[in-house]
Length: 363
Ligand code: PEP
Ligand code: MN
Image (cartoon, rainbow, N blue to C red; front, top):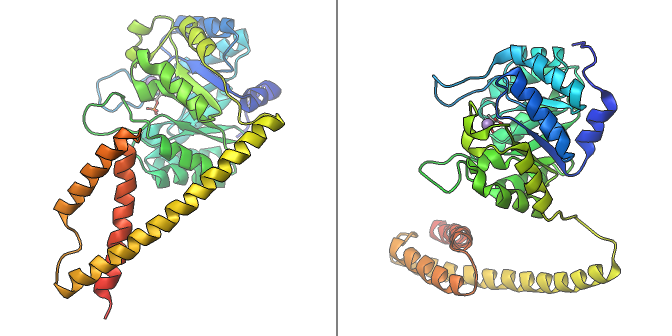
């Protein structure tokens, strides 16, 4: 689809390639005044590279504010004109893609409630065929990496060259500290799978509240994320959506100023020599761990033989609870988290079961 001056070419590319890439703006565009004032105050911080705003808002439940719709697009166009900030908007249908491009939106993003639905993702991808626009893909609301990767593939197959990932956390049943549990390991897995794609962290939807945003932002930077997408509003408490998690542009600046920015590497030979030495120790310990795990499996196999001879089930719930109990108590004393111990022993246990199953199935 041909559009007018969508890509103020270089500035969009400069923003897309900047590290860290900082995207900010309101959860939703509400009024022209709100969009323009937010954009101007964000630009004044000198810290923001791209302006975001939700125009169409997919809400979990009906009856809530669902976005101003296409009439908000000229507001963003105007905000870009005044501030020079490239813009990004969430799209969920082919029509929304077309409308956004008609009004010169520079980067599109696919939201968490769309990434879950291959029909919708495909519709968006089809509308993007032949269009040279960067696309950010949020993780699906449920912790399913196949869906996230599937959305990436659909968009890539439509010929989109510049794709980025947004980690916005995963919804889980019940109350937690977070609105959406970060489950960092899933985002890290995607980062390893798509090493050339920028990964942006969205602390706003992970936290759901502004008081813990900064710690999530810092953690993302510690984990070498390529940027942050943070919701901001000129009057957060009165925002029409996601009021609790938004911050003023000035508060955003304060937070960005207090982050310790880390880089992936330095050229200092002392640093590399010290790291090399420690990494060798880690390799050594990893080798030993593997040896010990191998021995553990051999013993599990011996137990398997006894179980087979006596027709006993592989899974012994009491014994398993005892192992976990023992391990978490010991582990916590030496600084290993309960979560890690449980995940680690679950994996070891599964492997033991597989070894014993082979024994039970053997002649
Ligand atoms: C948003 O960015 O405002 C939004 C709706 O996000 P998500 O798709 O992550 O819920
Ligand atoms: Mn929001």
